[in-house]
Image: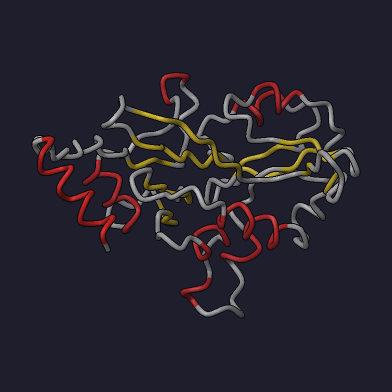
Length: 231
């Protein structure tokens, strides 16, 4: 089993609802502990976030468009963050492929953060430990929730339905079918870490038809202006 996310870059509107929902749910999670905020009401507020959205412009004007790229832990099959961890705090669960951090073992050395090419790990200055996306592991296995709600908070919050969650090891899952039909890809897969999370490519911007009409003769323009003045 390889649980992961599928993100449709053609549908994502960059509203940050996924990031906010993630922050809200995981801020009180027993898995990762509280997510610190630094000067939340100051001039330069900051804090720990599991999911961040990058914004890029693709194409050339006037046929350009904004590409919104959500970034979080990719739960790589060959996760470099797990390999370099000196204490064994970073580990990959064999039963579902989720990469997690044991907060009791983490000493905040930053090695995993330096090894991650996606910038998906953040040091919580309050606890002195690393934090990252857990795929809401405490939610997806909660038997007290209805089946349809056993999904990561980011998936449930997305207003554009640009995010999917499922077993990417199962070729018949909706997530796997979407990747297959749309030509999904892993981010920077050439590095060899085999990211589980997949992205559905954005379609090419469609040319915007520009309607041009010849300017009216000078006489007609003056006549129109005179009529407007008289009114």
